Amino acid sequence: MYERSKSLEEIIKRRIERESAISFRDYMEICLYYPEKGYYTSQRKIFGMKGDYLTSPYITPLFGRIIAEQFIEIEGYLNKLHIVEAGAGEGIFAGQVLKRLEEKGVEADYTIVEPFENLKTVQENNLKDFKVDWIDSIEGVKNLKGCIFSNELIDAFPVHLVESTEDGLKEVFVTLDKGEFREVLMKADSRIEEYFKKLEISLPSGYRTEVNLDCIEWLEKCHDALKIGYIITIDYGYPSVDLYSQKRNSGTLMCYSKHTVTSNPYISPGMWDMTSHVNFSALKLWGEKFGLSCLGYTDLANFLLGAGAEEIMKEIMVNEGYSSYAIKFQSLKTLIMPGSMGTTFKVLLQSKNIRESIGGVSRKPFIREEL
Image (tube, rainbow, N blue to C red; front, side, top):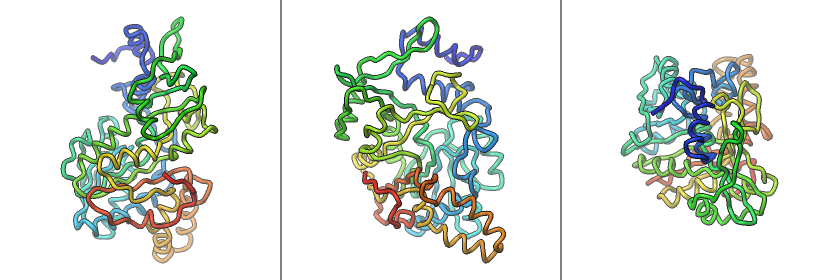
């Protein structure tokens, strides 16, 4: 039963008092998703300049326009296109895609997976000119022939915090000390030990990092929903060898609010977005265990260039003139230039029952990583 009369901090502390300690993963889940009070479930403005951070669709409307070209390519392989977007934010990306598909005369079904009513209401308003269906869980998708797409979704899944000690791998739990949050180390969940074993990763003593087990569950559900087609995952992260390297021995967990950042997750619960970098090696490994093929891994810059960014810019020059071209290219540069978001963000392409690749992963990436 949800407690709505108390602050989120009080709710968390009451739960800790009942259980003596909760895993950091559960603490993070409450902070982000507690009904009406969590970061994503409240009425606060999250996205855009007036929110807490910018995502690619807010930086340039060309983001969705370019990726729409990949959906069109997929439609050519499947003869029918059904796009399922998870983590749709305010629906800005969906609007960009659907407008482009409309311009190109391509018909497609579009479904948004949105468990939160506050975000669904905003999406419905922003997408009122398009035909879109909504479901509250990926498990509502059956026998999909198309593509499951996400942009900055997996980094917001709650993660287990772990620390390697001389006594073995320990997990961070949250307890109370004189009414304040305090971390304690307890025996790690056996699934976490199995996670590192399968990835063949051994952490040195004193090393602290995150483990995202929820993303593995998510990927299995995506596999089950897909009959034939693709999964496109865009997020910031690294392969295991880089994510768990010595230079990241304090982990990657960060909190964002009003375009400011902190590494302290215990300040004003529910008021900060909490994220950690994605392990793309884990997505590839478990995807293959579930029956998904890995067709490509690249950075966002080369994905957009391979998908047709240059062709779309030429189109803008011809149809709209140099002035419009210059303005739009300036915003696009943030996503396609080395050292920018274009290299920070990565793209993983997986498929089920189809082996044809797509243009976005055809170019040699700026990154030199291997999964």
